Image (cartoon, rainbow, N blue to C red; front, top):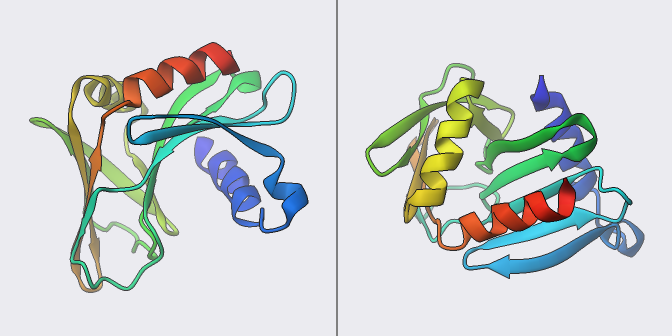
Length: 167
């Protein structure tokens, strides 16, 4: 399952507080609201595009900064794993979904991240993101529904550059 791989990689980035570790990831460029980062390995072992929400509700929710990620592990042939850092612990079986246009995608939580429940739907979410203008991610918390709205401006270009650089 990809979840452990993503969480291990994410732990690396969270621990990247020292200048040496921070230097191991390179910000390639920003495409609209999305930024592409790659590791320093040749060939790349890990690449991802990321964005922060343009709005969040409720505004006073106690949590760390949320982010959307689309990750790739070229060595393993993994091209597009979608995840969302919600910034709070997600309870098991909590209601969670991502919406782009009229399409909805069920999510599941693990720690403070949400992932697409059905891997076959993950590619459909990526396709919807490429065509859409906004994406909403909603997850139930102890204090009600937390909703983040992301701009999809530039996601198609960022994903194309990710494929070009990492595969």
